Length: 166
Picture 1 (cartoon, one colour):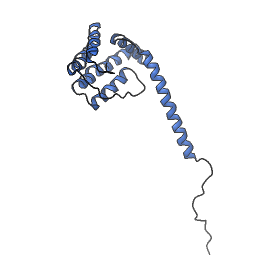
Picture 2 (tube, helix red, strand yellow):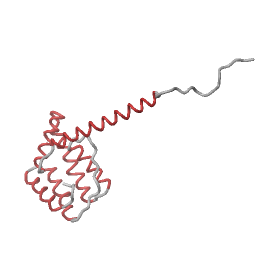
Picture 3 (cartoon, rainbow, N blue to C red):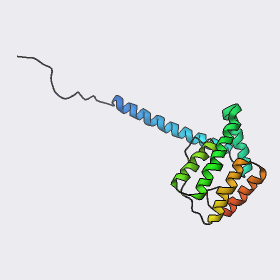
Picture 4 (cartoon, rainbow, N blue to C red):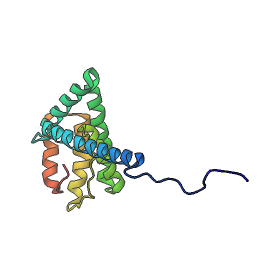
């Protein structure tokens, strides 16, 4: 006769398991990170609160210089070129989910936003004004960030009349 160990099921522990505690801790850390990103986003939004394009341009450049040091001006110029000379013209010609996504990602980079932006597809009442704003005013701002370009951007944004898109 052979004596062997019992082959009954595994013993269930009473109380919380290590896996349950680890999952709970991961959820709490993820929620804390989300709250921190939201707080950082509010601080960043407060830092970029200019009423016009020229003021926002200056504020963003200062933020880039503060974060990246000596190469901050170059990083801002690159982000501005991608946003104004690539994302906006594509959005102007072909307003679809993909170009809205590209615009949002480039805007997040340009604004140094820690929170991902999600915009809805725009409703465009005046297609001509939309094209002028996105395909002329924005590339002009990206290539020659001068007062005249910023003023043209502000005028075209008013004529465009698309809520939430500047």
